[in-house]
Amino acid sequence: MTSGAPTVSFEFFPPKTEKMEQSLWQAIRRLAPLAPAFVSVTYGAGGSTRERTHATVCRIQSETGIHAAAHLTCVGATADEIDAVARTYWDAGIRHIVALRGDPPEAAGGVAGHYTPHPGGYPYAADLVAGLRRVADFELSVAAYPEKHPEAGSAEADLDNLKRKIDAGATRAITQFFFDNDAYFRFVDRARAAGIDVPIVPGILPITNFARAVEFAGRCGAAVPAAMADAFDGLDADPETRQLVAATVCAEQCQALRAQGVHDFHFYTLNRADLTVAICHLLGVRAKAVPAEAVAGA
Ligand code: FAD
Image 1 (cartoon, rainbow, N blue to C red):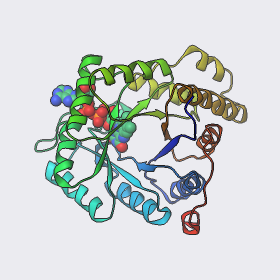
Image 2 (spheres, rainbow, N blue to C red):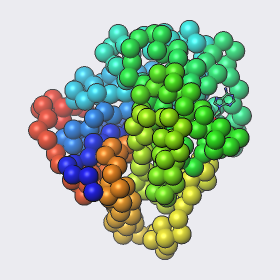
Image 3 (cartoon, rainbow, N blue to C red):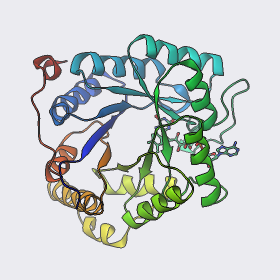
Image 4 (tube, helix red, strand yellow):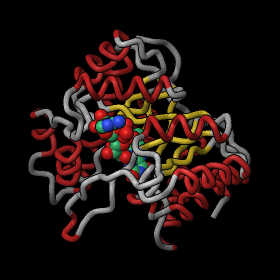
């Protein structure tokens, strides 16, 4: 077991409505005292949230003083347009970008569309990383897939792709969420053997809605262990018990990662604080004093 509290980071998505904005800021006010290394804000499929992502990232950093990272994708824009977005981040004091290929917007009926590089755009995340390196001296994080990206021809091809992203200048990989810790450790071993030596931070999804988590997992190829399905079995109509079970299941996953030396954790908060606060607490992450303005926002 590694000693000391781990380092945590939190991911949010940009709110669409006034009500969602309020719940995001409630979550930020509860999570800010945990002094995350950084927080990040996603970029909607097809670049649909460009302005909202920008506004949310800048507001978090200026009102809480926490380093905020902007997700940026290759979808639906030329390289020049993406470079211009990156420059506005740099000028606003944002120094960390999570550089992604992105997924196309869903077609009618919620079916995922087929990805086609934009003419004149950055085709893949490795190209985006190389482009952003030319724009400014950003800290660059990229995505990694312990259970393989669904479109990758093989696990080896996917690992080669991660290596290209690191060789292009990324300094951290954040994984897709997973529930099978062995899959994560096997992946890290393979990455180290392939010469990838940047931190590979596990992406942790505290489950608020098990049925929806299973659906997400199916889409991104994450296995759902039978023990986890069993833990949530019969709780669809019992949100209070489900919440307690969710905290326990996720805390056990994180504590097992911690016991094997994992020091950094990235939480997919879905803009909710409760489970993440509880899990961080169980990991030994305690609130630190934060400037009054950090918790007074909104
Ligand atoms: P890439 O690394 O470019 O890889 C995509 C696929 O293409 C892989 O299968 C890869 O093996 C293959 N590939 C790479 N290069 C080539 C090539 N030259 N020729 C052929 N195939 C190639 N999506 C969003 O829309 N917005 C977000 O904010 C967002 N945040 C995310 C944060 C994290 C931490 C993670 C893990 C994912 C996030 N996603 C987000 C989802 C992500 O955009 C999708 O998983 C997307 O399908 C792949 O993005 P990538 O950056 O991994 O792509």
